[in-house]
Image (cartoon, rainbow, N blue to C red; front, side, top):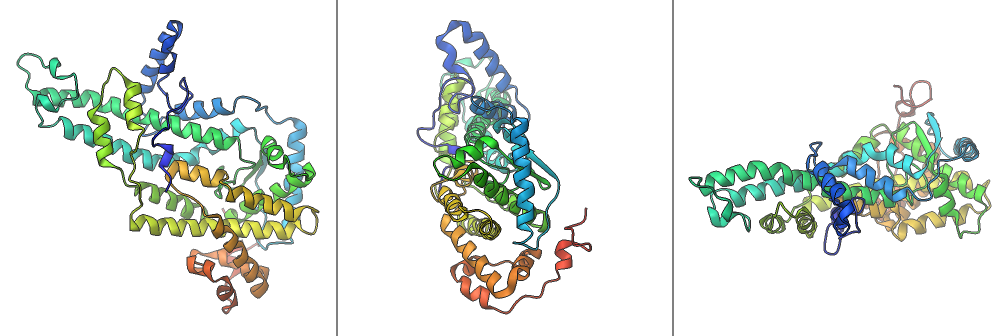
Length: 447
C-alpha cells in the first residue's frame, strides 16, 4: 500500500516554500537578505486557520510547479479543442445510447486545470489530513497532561516560573502549542498536496484522467499541452490523438451526466476510505515528543516520516476492492465506447487505445495521484477485465442493454463478475426502463 500524501522515509524536498520538503521556507536561511521573507512566510503559515490542509499553500505550490512552459491556450488551440470535442460527440452517438452531456467545451492550461479541479481535491484530501491533525493534537495533550516537568518537551523544563506547577504550565503550553501544531500540520499537507497536483497537472490531458469528473459535470476540457505530450513519440497524426482523447473526455462526461448516482458514490467511497486510514500512534507520539517550537523545519521533518500504519484493516481492504471495481467499470466502459466510436474513423485507433492502457499500466496520473493522496492504487488488470466485460455484454444484450446497467448501482457488475465476465454477459437480460436513466424527453436527467 502506498503512503498517503507521499509521507515516509526520504520525502524531504527542495528549498523554498514551493517544495514539499520545506513549506516554511527555511532553505533560504543561508542568504541573510532572504531571512525576513522566510520569517514572514513562517508567520503566514502558522497563522493558517482554514482547516486541516493549507489550501493557499497547496494552490501556490501547484501553480509554481507548472509555471514554466505553461502558456494559456491560444485562439487556435481553443478552436481545435472545440472542434475535436464536437466531432467526438457525433461519433459517440453511434457507440452509446447515453446522450451528450451538453455544457461548456473548454481548452485549459495546466494552471487552469489546477484551479478548476481544486474543489474536488478538497473533498479527497481533507479526511486524511484531519485524521493526522487529530492524532497529533491528542499526542501533544497526552504528553503534556499529568506528566510533571519530566513530561515536557526537551528544553522546556527551565521555563517553569516561580509558583507555577508543571501541570498548570503544561496546560498553558498545550493551549499555545496546539494551534501552532495544527497550522504546521496544515502547511505540511498543503505542501504535499500542492506538489502532487503540480506533478499531475503536468501529465493530464483533460478533466477526467483520474476517472472522476474533477471539474464537475457539464464541462468538457482538454489541455493542449497535455495532448501534445501524450502524442509525442507515438508516430500518430496530432489530429487523431486530439480526437481520440476528446472521445474519452466526452464519453466520461456522458456517463457521469446520465448516471447521476455515480459521481457522489465514487467521491463518497474515496473519502470514506480516507477517513478510515489507520494512523501510527507511536510515530505521532515520537514526533510530538521532539517538538521544538523554535525549529519548525525539524518539526515538519519529524511529522513527515512514517505517520501511517502500513497495512489496511479488513474493512479498509473491502472498501478498497469496491472502489477499485467501480473505477475499473467506469474506465472499462469508457475504453470500450471510445474504441467503438473511433475505429470506423481513426486509422490509429487501436494504437491509441493501447497507448492509453500502457499509460495506466506504468503508473499514469490516476494511479499515482490516488496512491499519493489517499493511499489508493488502481489495478490496470481490472481495467482490462472491465473492458472485456462491457464488450461481452454489448454482444449479448446490445448497446441499449449494456448502457442500461448504469441506471442504478444495484444493476452493476461486481468484483466477481470481473473474474468471470462471460458468465455475467450470458445471464438473462435485465429489464431496465431507459426513461428513468435518460429522462422523459430522452435528453438526459432533468435538473
